[in-house]
Length: 81
Image (cartoon, rainbow, N blue to C red; front, side, top):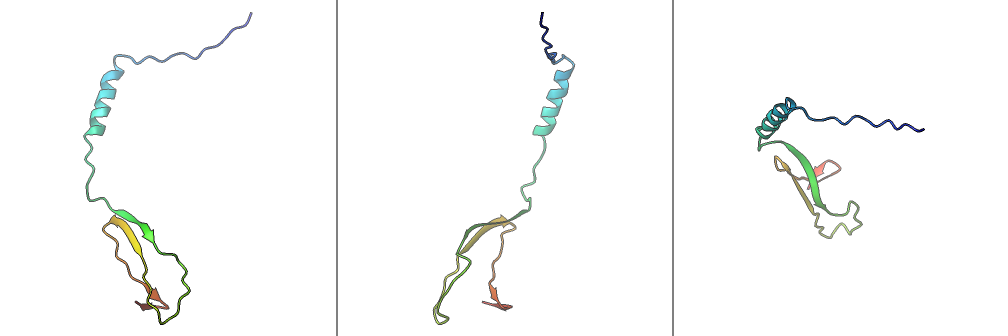
């Protein structure tokens, strides 16, 4: 003869229902501020390495999103472009 041990099924008692409804109400009542800070995320960028003639112009693309909106600047050897 072989015995199988089955785990007991847990039933939700009537006393637990009001607690769950209360918790659901509290969660849905949370106010999420709309001015949360969001770190910058780069959404588009140019290749990192360029080999160009120094007499030529170059276009560097960079797009990012975040809150507050990110600002961009480029430097080379400490000099801003």
